[in-house]
Image (tube, rainbow, N blue to C red; front, side, top):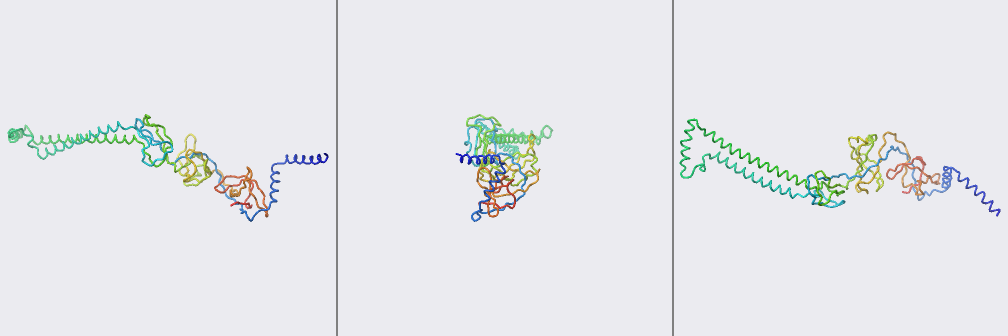
Length: 381
């Protein structure tokens, strides 16, 4: 019993001392223990820590959007009688996605075509009469029946006598007759043009009654169903090309000077992890309320994400100077607990070093504290 008491008292006192040790001391004790482990340089590659100038960045949130997206709206009142499909259905360019009942418009077009045909007939008739009067002003159809003696008497005696006495002017009479037929031609031509314009207006409405796919894409949202009655201006469905995606970010105006079209930056997706994005478009003006400028970034093709998902883009902070930080491969990190660590090789021995990491750039990661340039670490290729 006495021995048991003596052995417990030093142990209890030891634990009390360990409880009040600072965390830095605990880390030092842990490092000293691992420093006694020989480095297995035969099977493990080593990497000399490099230092690079890292531009300070700020992470901004954005949304994944399709590069092309349109909203088809009603251009005339009517009832929906064609709807190509549901959300997610893919259609090629020029496919009829939605249509409004055009029975009434087609009936009006037939009536306009009939009017055009009538005007065309009147135009041809007036043209023939004008040509007859121009070529044969005294044609036989003007003469009465029988031998045509009254007509001959007028032509040979009455008209010359009237012309001599100044009571009539045959030239003016002929000019007036020609002008009358010419007026009939112009009226018929005007009626023909009016009918043609009416047909073109109806054809335009017939085109507006259908919503065609402007490019290859999918329906991402539909607001109506077959049988719904719509009015001009009502949105009907949204159609987008989701094979090319972008990230849209509202960037504070003070960071715009650090961006230029074509620049490659890092982005993190909710689904898919880190990717490289390219600055595709910088809007020319800022939002008046939020004082931000819209910037669109192109995502690589076949990126594992979807329109509407959240994304983050690292934008250069040009207001602060770049700083030099150690950079190591991500493969050198040891999966040991929740703290990032690496094995540091020193004089043939290795020690486990806990690090504080910064941003990740592809296969590399910056180190804020725990390493310095020139140190050698183990790396798993």
